[in-house]
Length: 373
Image 1: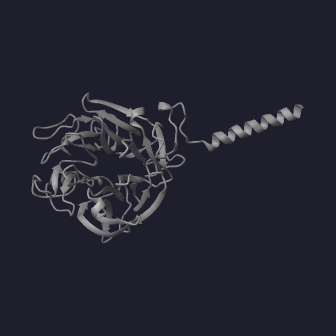
Image 2: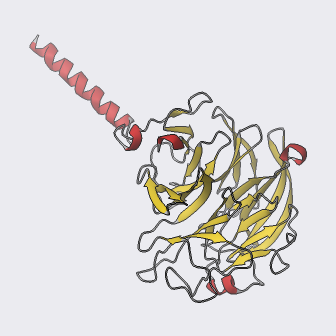
């Protein structure tokens, strides 16, 4: 009997060890909101958090199709279709994509008249003659679960190993908005003849949108590395932007801005509270804290944006000017934030981008119930 007791104890200890190891990296049920990570299905919207799909490679952007499924761009040039019940299928790969530093396949946007023309837009980094690093926006047809017929819409946007911008979205006016970084050449942000360090506003075939302030593709200038765009119910355009690296006081000060046509947002001379006359001040900046803000969307009076180095889902309540960090240090680096057609918040993790600490199943698309925040 004594030996049976010892044997039973050993089996119990081994089982417990195996359970702990096999669940390494999972979210503890005692963390924020008693998070559960179940596979997402259409009828499980009451859960606070659900993993839609996992084992992706640096998913950069999400765009929903009219049938409520989604297209997801990976920085390596591969595009996946994710069905409403979480089934994943590769639907295309863009061979010209150059995954280099922060560059690669980034933004994706679905044309407002997709049901008629089947157009999907992408922003990506490429190499010209094997030497120059540039970015472009292209349009492709998406039919029968396949991407085809790539057409260049905006080309030769300055690029580099860092600061490529990359977010694209159609606005409520039907025009395509594009964020571009300074490509680590800050002076380009103030050069209105350059496409770097700007927010561009173009027609669906890449021409300057009517009413643009300089009669070019440029809508606003003086940006460092903007990666988030969203409109509120009053159609105000909001943007998130990475502040400078280095040591204080020349560090951090990531920004939330309201974007207006023709306005100068100050980079590189104006940062944080150091804002000269004639330059737009940020609505909010991070001070010494580092958000490294990426994707942005609007829901119920709040702006929700991704934190890369901040490793959080940030919520900025516009009316009260209050900033809250949700799920701090829970999912790791967060790249995109999109409000889905079901009014749920969808985020992508970016732990395989070379700067994160990957966990089991990374990278992931996660659905969050905003009513549980």
